[in-house]
Amino acid sequence: MTFPDSTPSDPWSVPPPAQPVPPPDPLVPGPVIAQIGDMAVTSTVVHTPAGDIPLAGSTWTVNDYWHSEQKIPPWAIAAAIVGFCVLTIFSLLFLLVKVTVPRGTVQVTVTNATRQYVARIPVTDQSQVTYVHQQVNYVRSLAAL
Image (cartoon, rainbow, N blue to C red):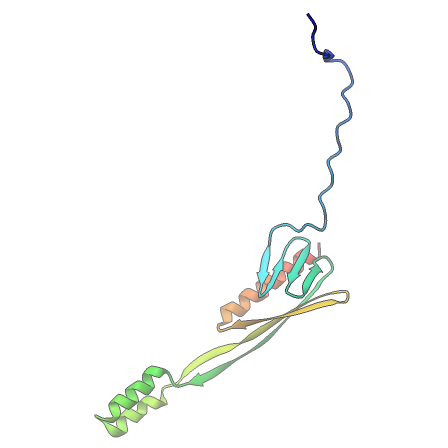
């Protein structure tokens, strides 16, 4: 009777060297940490429609370009037209009603060496402007690491 070649394992023998674990590829970014407009920020890279920009050492700037407009709401125009048939003069007072509508954009610029990208984010409320500023401040802290 023959047995296949098998060497008995000696518990006191020196084990063979382990295969080294390859380091993670620095070009493979991780999951998206923050989304600012059309820019996706990972732990190493900022993905933009124009290409990738390294996050380390990047400079971020934020500019607010928003204003408030006053306009007549649609319900006031409809009430003035319908009321014109009933009370001619008094129905025109509905046209004095004004509503303030904030609108504009927040411009976020990321720069690293010779690469630069500008994202314009439409906003309609002060809370949206504050949120963009908070996101950029978070990404600035990541870029400084």
